[in-house]
Image (cartoon, rainbow, N blue to C red; front, side, top):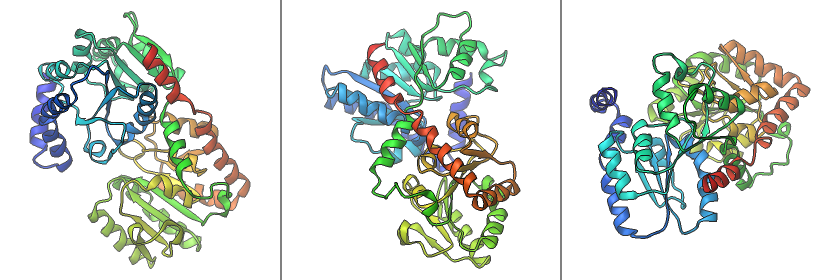
Length: 415
């Protein structure tokens, strides 16, 4: 009953939500896309089906897919997405066929698997769909989950639904967790069942962040203290804005040479116009990133009105605040970390192993209020020793976790 109810809910909400509508109608076309792809590629070559929830999760898949293509260049890859943010914004030469994940009804999944006959289905992180896993198991298609993450307060251990998740996860052929803690929680979910192959292999997203950073032409050997005094606010939600906006204004009034780069998670014109009007009302100059270059910012406030620039923009600042921590969960903290920035974020960070690592090592700081952010940033700017220590701790978290992509590829091939 759950899936039909969700399907009906999706049909209703897609009338009012563009993003849901786009994904809903995209899924209606998935089987046709697969038929066209298979008809054009009649081959005996192996097909690997990867799945990511959205753009962020694809950052975990990208280095794994690239590594797999290096070893098996003749293989074909299908990559499915749940969210339009992934489907619309991922363009990778290693993807042979890009689709929306089909509706998770067993007859639809059955149709898709019969036509594709994948060698393996490989999922990243958390977006696990039961009928996809169960039909694949029934048809003898091995399924692998990598970068698996389980928080201490996971609902998967609640008495009434634990058995459901036990059945789902025990149907995987292999599960590769990020950390030993994730491994232990997975073992609790799988208790007294025939377990899949389980290994602790880390998070390939660290490798992708490092690859991206290496491609930048910025002189990264320059000390972070020699950069402009700029605070980058990345992947901002309205909930973050409501909490910290007045504190940002106070910081800018108190620190005359402080500028900010402000990037919404979804840079809608409505949000950008509202932000521009607000900051101008506080007598700050405002410009948009599309009208200038990151190294030639003249305004106190720069609004990011494009997608895909954040990773590079972090190299032009000294401190970062990452959004999502007061709503759905924080976004990518690795990109500011590799750029050597101390990082602030809200209390909802349990979805991010990287954020936990940053806090533990002194490169990340959780805030509960705008006042926390104000005092924390002032302290870093006033104490160079503390600032450098946090900067080093932040980037060190990334460097200590490199190599996961190679381990995941090796085990996908050999398990």
